[in-house]
Image 1 (tube, rainbow, N blue to C red):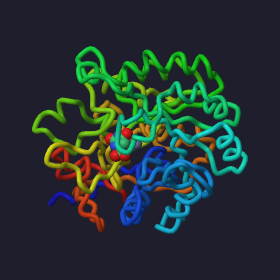
Image 2 (cartoon, protein in one colour):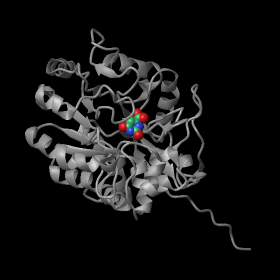
Image 3 (cartoon, rainbow, N blue to C red):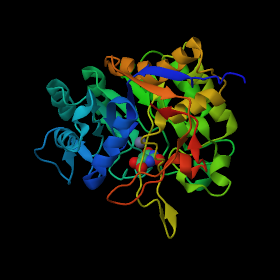
Image 4 (cartoon, rainbow, N blue to C red):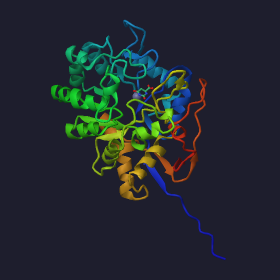
Length: 374
Ligand code: DOR
Ligand code: ZN
C-alpha cells in the first residue's frame, strides 16, 4: 500500500497590516465591525468620518451643525473595542466649518493627521462636502500642506448628468483625475494626497506620474470585479462608489499593485457596511469586506498572475498589504504577524444588532474563499 502523503497547505506569514480606508459607522455597529477588522490581522485602521453625525471638528467645543469631534469619535472607537489596535487614524470630514485655524490647532495637538474630501452629495453621507475650490480659496489646503496633514480624496466629479457620470468613454473619476487633480497638485506640490479607492486607468496613470507626495488606496472589489460582474444578475452587493469599471481599468489596477517596484499603491478596503442595502427604489453604495479582506486581496493577486507561494510573490503582496500604506502615513510596520493559509473558508454574513451584513464575497456568488486566516 502506498504511504499516505501529508501535504501542507501553502502559508503566508505577514506583518499585521493597516486598513487605511474603512467605515465603522456608529452606535451598535461599532463593536462587531471593529471585531471583524481585528480578526483579519489588522494592526491599525483609518476610520472614515462620514458617520451620522459626521466627524467634522477636531475638539468637542462648538460647531455650526451637529457633528462629532475626532477626539469624541476616537473615544467611541476605543470604548467599542478599538483599543487593541496599534493605531487609529480618524480623518477630519472637510466641510463648511473647516478653517485653516482648525487645521493648525488640530495638527499641533497631534489629533489631526488626515482630512477627507467628499464630493458634495457624491456618496454616502456626503451632503456636508463642499467643492474642491472652496478649500483652495479659503486656505484649508494650504494649511494642510504647511502642517503635513494628509488629504484623503474621494476623487469623483460631482453634480454630473448621468451621461457623463458613467459612460463608455468617460466617468466621474476619470474626469476628476484629468481635470481637477492636475491643477491641485500643481498649486500645492507639498500637499500629501491619497487618491482613495482608485477604480480607473486614468487615476492609476495620474498617481504614477505625480511623484512622491501622491499615493493611492485600492479596494478588493476594484481588483476583483468589473461593471459586468455587477450588471450580470444585478448583484447589488457589488455596488459601491466609485462604481466598478471595465476590464482595462481593472488590468491597470492589477498592474499597479503587482509591480515589483510598487511603493504608491496600498490596501484600503473601503469596507462599507450597510445593514439596509436596498430600499424599494434604490441601493446604498458600499461593499462590506470586514473579516475577509486579506483573503480577497490574495485572490486578486493570484488572478493577476502572482504566485503567492514564491518569495517574490509574497514580497509583492506584502508591499501592497503591509508596507506601502504605513510608509506613506509615517507609521511603523507591525512587528507582529498574522497567517493566511491556502485552505477553503466558508463565507458568511456578519451578524450585528442592526441585522446581518452580507459580504462582497457572498454578494458575488462565492460560497467559499480559497484562503483563510489561521
Ligand atoms: O461605496 C461607498 N460606500 N463609497 C463611499 O464613498 C462611501 C461608502 C459608505 O460610507 O458607505
Ligand atoms: Zn470610503
